[in-house]
Length: 217
Image (cartoon, rainbow, N blue to C red; front, side):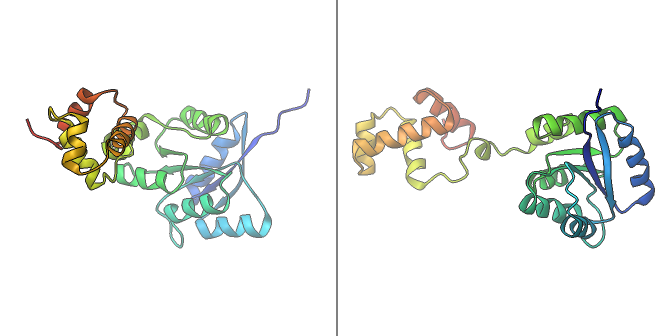
């Protein structure tokens, strides 16, 4: 019976002792093996570009000299998007986690995790393409701007006016007259906003507008 091919991991961390221990741990997992260890992003680039060593996963520290984790994650995303980046750091600040995810990291773990969690994270990266720990999920929930979540980062002036008027007792025809627009254009605003806000009627629009302080009772 032939042994299945193991998935490869590169460790990018400037702490040699930690990286060495991490390598032994990963090599003990049945489905993974460490391909190489780099001390920073520049070393990783050289290894990949000069030697063509493409790991399946890069375990990436954040605070490193020469080229830090943010820059490295961004470079990997732009140049080797198939490589899955997993941040592994002592940093647990929400902004740090979010910044790494925005740079292209597919997961974020703290260095004090249990070995089994690391094994699970690596496997989920291979199977699903990402790993969201409880910490990451919590961070995402806390930080999501509701407008961004619903794709509302840029209400146009006419859309805001429509929302405010639609929350009154005016008919859509009356709204069209006040805004000096055709009923067809007003209907377009209604349809687009209802779709973006995931609401079904004007009652839903009123509730949304109240929550976002777009209107006052």
